Amino acid sequence: MITFKPVDASNYLNVVNLKLHPHQENFVSPNWQSLLEAIYEEDKNPFAIYNDSEVVGFILCSYYPADEAYPVDSWWVERLMIDKVWQGKGIGRQALLLFLEEFKQSTEVKDIRIGVEPDNDVAISLYESLDFKKEGVVDGETVYVKILD
Image 1 (cartoon, one colour):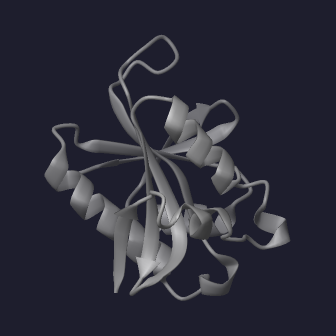
Image 2: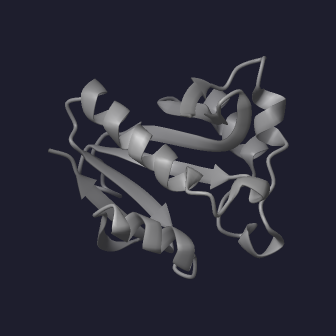
Image 3: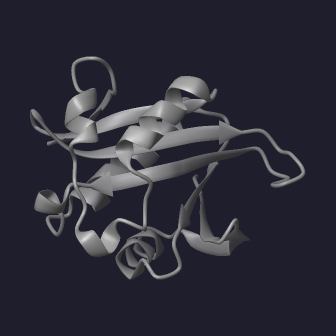
């Protein structure tokens, strides 16, 4: 069963030690960097993705109020990664569906955005299959948005 737990002293090394396939390493920042950002930047929320009792992935979500760079109050999935050993088993899909369900129940903002490298075809296919719509390009990443009911 897929669950989330906040990253803390008991699991941060498991998150840091998650690995991607070599061809995926440019698609997402290293987990150690994401955890460091979460310590020093407000409104970044890091979670370990568990399959039963084993850490199999990582998700980082963040809230950004509207500003000149992006004129809409927005929640973003800034990082989503599944360890290379666990890829291809539907865990990324299950984790994103669980995140969307939990997100929908916990916030007034009803749209969620996610950035993706333009050549990350697997991630794009996943997001589109879950009704994320291509919105544009920000800082070189293609942005997808999903409006929750």
